[in-house]
Structures are given as C-alpha cells and as structure tokens.
Amino acid sequence: MPPAIPDENKILRLRREIRHGESVALARALTESEWERVRAFVRRTSRESLRLRFGQAADFLDDHTLKRFFHIVNGRGEMIWMPEQGGAICAIAHLVRLSPVEAEIALIVRSDCTRRGIGEKLLRATLVHAARQGLGTLSALVLYENTGMLRLARKVGFEPRKSCGVAIELEFDLRQIRDTAMAAFAPEPADAIEAAIR
Ligand SMILES: CC(C)(COP(=O)(O)OP(=O)(O)OC[C@H]1O[C@@H](n2cnc3c(N)ncnc32)[C@H](O)[C@@H]1OP(=O)(O)O)[C@@H](O)C(=O)NCCC(=O)NCCS
Image (spheres, rainbow, N blue to C red):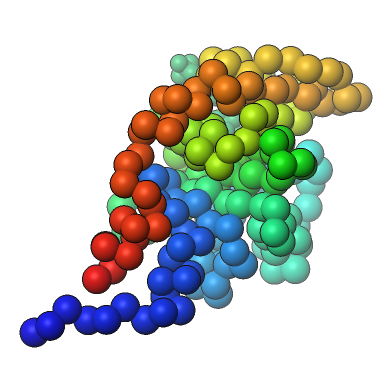
C-alpha cells in the first residue's frame, strides 16, 4: 500500500500544533473535540484551583464562561497542555504575548494530579517553548496567598518584579536558557509533524 498523502488542511492545522516531548502547544482556535477535553479537565479541577489560576471565582461549568477564560487569545496567545496516557489533559498553561519580546504565562494542574511534578514539568517546557519562539522575558501575576505557585516559580528561577495589590508580578529572563532551548528539540517541529503523519 502506498503511504497516504496527508491532507493539506491537516498539515496546516498541525503546523500550528507543535509537540515538544510530552507537551502540546496550540496557537489556533480549539476544535470542538479539544474543547471537550478542556471541559473534562475543568470537571476534575477544584473551584479553588480555578480561582487561584484566574484570580476570581466563576462558574466554569457554564460553557460561555469556560471559553471566555480558557480561549487562546487570537494572534498572540498559545495554549500548552500536558496530556496523560489516553489523551486526557492533566495540566494547561497559557502564554499571551504582551510585546514582540515579552509574554505572560499562567498555568493550572488538574486537582487529582497535583504534587507529582507535573506543574514544574509543564512550566519548564513552556519556558523552553517561549525561548524557542524568540521571546526574551516571561512574566506571571500570582496572588500573594498562592504559596504553591510562588514556591514553584521561585524553584524554576522567576524573580519578583513588582507588587500589584493582592498579587505579585514575577519575571523570568529567557536569555539564560536560550542556548539550551535552541539545542533541545531538533529537527524542526513542523518537519517532524509532517514526517509523523505521512
Ligand atoms: C501551583 C500548581 C501549578 C503547582 O502544580 P503541581 O503540579 O502541584 O506542582 P509540582 O508537583 O510540580 O511542584 C513543584 C514545586 O512547586 C512547589 N509547590 C507546588 N505545590 C505546592 C504546595 N501546595 N505547597 C508548597 N509548595 C508547592 C514546590 O516547591 C514543589 O517542589 P518540591 O516538590 O520539590 O517541593 C498547582 O497547584 C495548581 O494548579 N494550582 C492552582 C492554579 C494556580 O495557582 N495557578 C497559578 C496561577 S499563575
């Protein structure tokens, strides 16, 4: 049997879906089946975790609310998620570009998956991904009460930048990992994706 010729739309879609080891980065609107995976993630995540992630309480079982908070900001946003075996999402990070060299990062781990190193793995993978995109700085706005995230951020090398009321802005200088990041994932992801679907 000759190998199937990949559908052009599928290649285009996958070009905007980059796999780095265990994490998947998406820079496009989610498909309905991907939204279904996000809904399943939210159903297994505590209201308190969602509040800490988004800085406010909301009804995430309401689809409109879910999409408002979890959508990928058009043209300057990315979602990086960590799937587990079987495909369910166990952690989600969002990157939003604030300028050509700076982006904001925030992440959340499914409640039944915390304290297993997943948040740290996703955060480090997202730093590498951001460095490979040519970004220079990542910032994160974290509530002062969020000791878990503050410890995680300090552990991977974020520094405090300024106080913003009930939250603190942290910053990570991506230049310190750029060389390692660039060497980490040869060949080019898009080529690898096309090869994988042939
Ligand atoms: C904060 C969060 C992302 C951590 O994810 P996680 O997978 O549980 O964290 P990890 O298991 O990778 O832990 C890595 C490090 O983070 C710190 N940490 C994580 N959770 C912690 C907690 N509850 N208390 C204290 N330290 C904690 C520790 O330093 C830990 O390192 P150690 O295991 O060597 O002590 C997760 O608890 C979460 O989703 N919280 C709700 C959403 C949120 O607060 N998002 C941040 C908004 S920017």
